[in-house]
Amino acid sequence: MPALSRRAARWAATLPIAALVVACGEPAATVAPQAASTTRVVTSAEPVATVKWNEVARGLVMKYNTSAPATIRMFALLTVAEYNAVVGTEKAKQRSLHPVDRGAVAGASAAVLSYVYPQEAAYLEGLVDQQETSVVHAGTRHEDFASGEAIGRTVAAGVIERAKTDGFFAPFTGTVPTCAGCWLPTTPPAFATLGQAKTFFLASNDQFRPAPPPAFDSPAFAAALAEVRHIADTRTTEQDSIARFWALGAGTISAQGYLNGVASDLAVQYHLSERETAHRLALMNMAAYDALVASHEAKYHYWLIRPSQADPAIVRAIPQPSFPSYPSNHSALVGSAATVLGALFPSERARLEAMVEVGAISRLYAGIHYRFDTQAGFALGRQIATWTLAHDIVGHQPFVLG
Image (cartoon, rainbow, N blue to C red):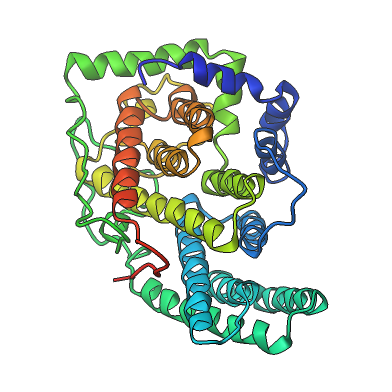
């Protein structure tokens, strides 16, 4: 990404100025979903259950100010459980049973979301009851919905047991290194052990570790730092708006929630079945999870200083995350999403590429990353997404969770 491409510039121009201005000045929790919806196309077709539960999950992310890493994990757990539950109903139907897909998705979704948000268990169970009533009124038998729901809950129980030992939230017990170019935390390092968490597809967490960033005392590093300073000193209204739009911090649907909204709307637009929708959302979210883990593995391997620590005169457009700079998590995230969704929705590839290119460069505009951070993160996300697609399941099979 040497510069913001014409394609990406056109995507940025599609964001209504009013939405961007509001997003800069109003509480993010009420603005981000509206801003996100302006770039998506939705038909009036009735969404499948997976889409509806995905919307419920995005609402809970906002309600509980869920951190970006925890949100990525939640969506991965949710969508893989939903997909495996739908596959479970297909296998039951082969045995002359008649479980309902919507029941399976409801059971899996309520169980996973109750694990992540236990305070909402009663609310989530109420949604299951509502969905059962809806499908029964449409002519489905109670026992068929219930058998599907039982499959979903059984699948979810396995996903939850795996999650309990995934090491995602393991405490940091190491030592913060000190050197001229080392990142200096002002609070305890955030998610410092995430790079060792259990992944879905990677052979090892350092499998795609980026090459080292430019040395702190090198001309290349000095030039990259000078670029961040120049942008901070001359930041345009458009650059500031892009940085703030893509910040999607606490109280919003988060970047991963935004991408789930994009993918969900594509599923509706193209009238995908329950299985197709669940499969595509699961692939996107599992790739994102692995990309996040790999990005943190690299971050805490290199411990690179943030731009505004290297040059305190840099004024940021958004808050600075509490972990090292290289590579960019956000760029890895959007890079993985563009690759997965572009492969699964080839007619949408150009639009998706333009969208995420803006998302990646937004971190440079914000003053929290060097250009080489965004480039390495974007490449990392693409590599992991490509690996994920290459190791996707064949036929109507569940994802095997090691």
